[in-house]
Image (cartoon, rainbow, N blue to C red):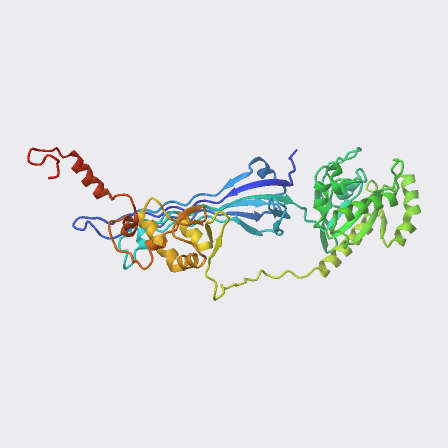
Length: 477
């Protein structure tokens, strides 16, 4: 028997973007033909898609980790890296996507409905794409961005027009088995049904679906008897049908008391007060059951509830019941608002929006927030001085330097952008233009560095190794 799973925690990770390539075109008689490093491919995204053939979240229960493919790195000869393959996860109709703290991110209802839950990282640009009139042969490339990582809760809520509610062993499974082609498990003991069953019912030109929700007991709204696991499947039902056992021999139980107990749980759960209801007085094939049904008929009418006396054993009264359910479903569908296609909303940035903010933090530093500065930092190779200089130029052109100065930042102040920390030194790049030098280096960084350059360190090493002579006892020549 297939296990039914209606709630899982899913850990998704989109693919990382591929790194850009640093390459110089070389061929015979043309040793320096210019940069030809290709761009890295974008990482694959993770998407949830509703598939009518999927009815449970069982696959995610056994495989809760989902990862899309990484993008490939660029190569020389202007060859771009391949894009990582997107990962499509098929989910049942009626799946609710929530954050770990319970915030609803999306409700996936309807075949083909999709949601991109984690976006793949951008691929880094190669040095061919970074070339400019000033940087004709960049000695660096951008790194690929990491893919988005997210933990979400997938919760299945059955999508049905009619929900059958009632105590255990009231005959809900038997009812759905005789009015539809569904074949749920039926036995003469309570809690036979542990998972919802869906059936399709046809009454002339009307077709609707019925959900057999497992039995509810007093305290179900607080989780007693797994009530919360069952009540969630009633949320999307347009019509509720109370299935009452008129032939029960349990003390203290009668049709009116059963209805009051179930209504109390529905009210405690909340959000179901506006659903139309009717009552199914089941098991009238038993003499005591028929007598009880006749006894409570007037009381139910006084409450404004339509009651139908049926027997799933002899199929008495089922035709009238199915037509009444079809009428309620048709009325609910007519009253429902028409679905409009999703409108594309354009929200242009404000004229005075700089695209970033600078905020002082408690330890005396400053935090720079913004999509572009944070993306640029993630794509920078900090082992390459030329790449660091390029980043500083971009931040200065964006206005980050001026904003830090206006916020009161002093030279040497700690600045955080994304996950990186810097000691702010505005004199490095203030009014100093980039001067092409050896690939992978930036003279502006070397001028401000207290560490001797590689050439200076080599000269000092040679001087220390020079042996003194009689004419030059101190080794100065």
